[in-house]
Image (cartoon, rainbow over all chains, first blue to last red; front, side):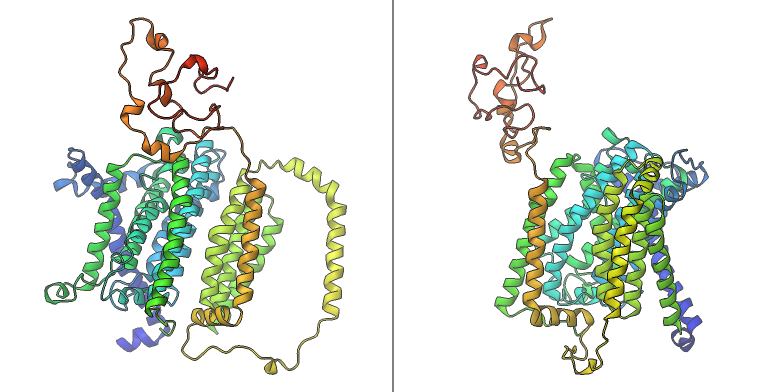
Length: 341
Length: 254
């Protein structure tokens, strides 16, 4: 049996498909319930009840929403570019799924444990902007177009600081492999020595996923709904799910880069009894809660403030911190001589 | 066998999409085909075992350069009839440029010499067990560190040049001095007024807030702000300032 899966071609293909399903099915269920969790958590914060009709505590609301979106009519504007209009939501959604191929859920448990895992994540997350940009252009609508342009400028700006924060982490790890990055945090999670970078990364992740308070691309008050104003039914649903899947992905990145991935907080008995994947899930859920908490708390940024924060605050800060990290590691002789992994 | 199939798939799609970049009618489609071409080039790098270059290609070209292309091209207002009209006028020039390039290429290739003793050329061999990312770093930051730094300087010059060329002080739009905005307190900006019935705030000179608070946080010289903002807490004699009339807020400086 093991020989069939590991050494024959068909076996390997089946094994890869099964591995992918083992990640995607929990992820999609998580996305479905994140939409519900967001409404419930925000309702609790605003002293409301939230969805409570479908099923006990509204647990079937996610499926009710899904059925509603699937059975609605897909409206394509007459001036729209049909192919690109339908392609954009699929791109957004599938990119958010693709990135999970390299996320390790336990020591060595990743679909693809590649040497350049961090770069792969950076590449995939920087492609997310195309879904938004293409949707804005293909809709042939001014609101959608302005929303798309805003989103593109915003995501490109915040990618720069995300990249520099990741470089600081990589300096301390000495490898681009996500597995090595987590293992390097055995003694102390990077969120403690690199606390400012942790905060910058988290805020940049909010901006990268177009979440409040940086949800200008969809700013209801000025752009109706921004880049997806013309979308309906399943196409809209894919955008919606793509946004939540991206939140999962960004929370996963925060957990792996700064919160020690699958590692328990302290490597002693009661903590080590809980298996690694559960720790990772707990950390991702914590980050997602903060995402929702932020949305329920802060008002939306103005566009010039957003750009100023990205370019004039985060970029210089993360650059200085990168140089500081390199200098500190060099001075104390802690610089890892990596690359052999 | 498998590698060869993958190589030919990537190479075919790469060449075809490169052809579509030139021949597509709609410039946005051209840029999207360009992105597809970049992707397939990254795939070829992966087949060659250069995973670092593949990822960098995607991050830099697809993630940054092509986004800016798409940004600009999407905002172009392209009229196809006009483009076709231009095609006939500029066709001779285009053909001339193409011919010159072709002649140059022919010259270059006719004198192309293949080095026979490639093995004797000194080159760096990565230590066994190094990933190609680490090996690339070894080469770049030890043997070619000055060239690498020089590349950085060239990019810096290009960046400064771009900023110098595009940065203009335009008095359109009112900009905000963020620090001053943060320093504002309720006492600076809020005043309780007794508004006479039926007259609104006209009796107070049209000001709904303490008069001096209007331009506290705006950058002098930006739209509608003519002079240095007055220091906080100091009331201003409005007859001394011609610009702050009763209905002038947001209007052009007089």
